[in-house]
Each structure stands twice: as structure tokens, then as C-alpha cells.
Amino acid sequence: MTFRHIVLACALSLAATAPAWSAGGNVVLIDVAKVDAPSHLPGLCQVNGIVAKVWDGKAFRRGQFIALKVPCSAGNSYTTPVDVTPRRDPRFIDVHVLIKSKQGIAHVDDTGALIWQRTRSPYDGMADTSGYRVLDGALLPVPDHVRS
Image (cartoon, rainbow, N blue to C red; front, side, top):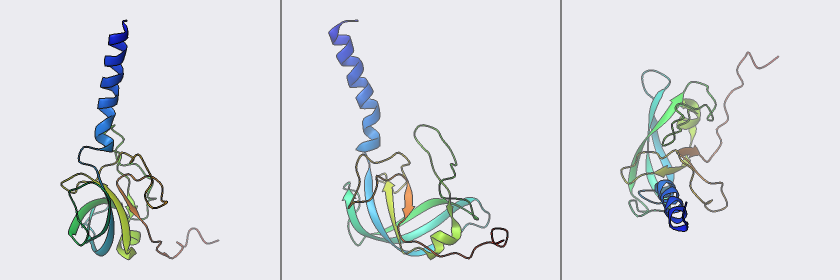
């Protein structure tokens, strides 16, 4: 393998990973206004809100309405994988946590679809982001089977 082949292979490898970081990637803070749960869980919750801050990307602006489809379930942990293909790795969020939330951070493409690959850097001291995360905690009652 010649030096030219090695450089070409490295360039192609970097080009394959770049879309996760840049092309169409936006990171926004959302003030949640309303969450609509689907008729059956697990499913996609409709999270409606206003963009409070734009950390990355150019497709959204502060004060703009945004609607996201966030995978949700009844009681599953937010770290439960839905699909683990390389381009998507969505995770369920408990529907009650979503409904009670007031803020979230989203990594989305220019159309508002969630991107489940991690961002390359943290924002305002928070960890890197993939998909959607609830930023404010919601206190939920402890289920009877957990109390003993």
C-alpha cells in the first residue's frame, strides 16, 4: 500500500464520520410547551416547544416553534435502546417524565428529525448529546413493587 493509498483511506474514513458531526446537525435547547402521548406505548411522543437556545447549526433560531417525535414508553428507562443501527440509536424516555418536563436538549437534523449519534462536544458544561434528553428532573411516585 502506497502513502497515497493510506492518505486516501484516512480521508474516506473521516468523510464517513463527518456527517454525524456537521452536515445537518443542530443542537438546541427547548422550552417544552406540551407533550402528546401516542395511543399505544411504546411509541413516539409529540414534544412541542420553543427553541430557547441554539448551540450548533443554522436551521433553527431562538424563539422558533419546534415539534419533535421522541420515542417514549411506559416506565422504561431512558437508556433502553430501540434500534442500534449505525445511523440511529434511539432511546425510550418514560412518557410521564416527558409530560412533566419543562426543558430538553435535542440533536436534530435540519428537518427536526432526531439524530442519535453523539455530538462531538459538550454544550454549556453538559455532556455531549444524542437524540433528545430531558434536562429537568421529574419526580415520579415509586411503584408498589419497588417499595418493600
